[in-house]
Length: 525
Image (cartoon, rainbow, N blue to C red; front, side, top):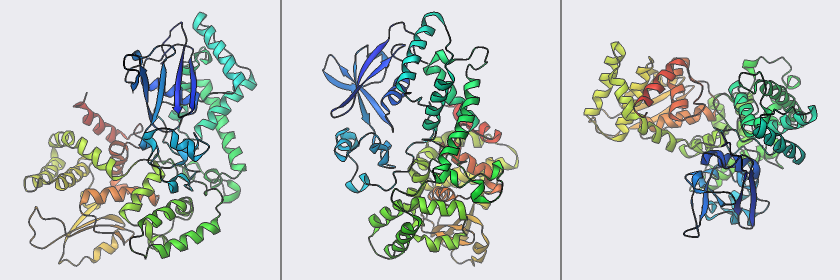
């Protein structure tokens, strides 16, 4: 919440070389750096992740801003763009710069883009997931002027402002165009977040008699968003066209609507500018030749990036069998490309995030596991006994994951099947979805597994994955890449992996997952 100060403040914000702007704060400098960043994003239209620096008067240098108490009215700030904001797609930067020279001049922190990335074909892709604090956009000039005056009146005497129908429509239109940058189908709680952010930035718009102060705005925003989707559908937006009644030929129930349900940021993207279905099919055929060549990772990466929207639309619309899809897109079925595809879809790194979060929670998870009683507790105890035989990090991760499955009253063997190298493994052909781990006959507990791989619909899609935790991370990435539903007998396991470990859509949890999450954070509070 912005600090209620009588005196307004103005800050000079340096956005890049030869690029700066003034940011007006009618209620003074915010209490937190996060709120100040949000206001700079809104007024300066900054996208992506960044940190702020301020000009220190003692040293006459820019220093990282950690508290807004370090700055005063007319202070000079500098936006430092972080590499993580650029790794997904260079299009996040191109919205802030109209030329290659401007992109290079932003900051030394952003000097990680190659010339090939700067001309990325993925300009239609979204760059960010739904934000923790919704960035209310800067409205058209006349609306901003009226709101500034109305906010001043509200600050002085508490007078609420009733915008004209046209002004209200302009506000809602701007909010809808901001929402679509993150997703086409916001949830009810996300509409709450947008309406709440609006009345926090412009408290004069609060509604008298409303419990929340913004329930009317929320309802109006839902209608506006529906109209906005219709407008985008009429101009050919693929993400919305896929759910068109004329296209499907039949009425679609809410549960059949093709939309992001697991925090996908780029669920059904448009083709890159200048590309058609026919031209991208030619790229796919070219890719089939490229995968047969040795030491050709860079070319494969570029063609996979270019054909992402074409491949994604094929997955969502056709729901192909895995064997057929693997034949058409063999390049996807490698660790490198599964990671890249997952990041294109979610903007989140796959294995690094998975392992980091798993290791971060492991100690607390083990404390939670040992308190489990009954049959599940005995199974967990037997699983964790393996840690006494092998304390390698790979073995620890595997034990934690298996124990997690048991803790959630699900069966680890539904996900991970272990075999000896001398076994007849024909039953693997009957596996719908799972991980296989093959041990050498007579191997010691500390010996590496002979092979670890993934089977989907009876097809071995990947092998030589090294260890169970790595295989599970890649399988999770494939669930997104192939738009696969979670198995019903492992739905809580995958929910926890998605929402607690990977922190995707972490606000909406089942009761079982929420209880586990609460226990995880008991020791950190």
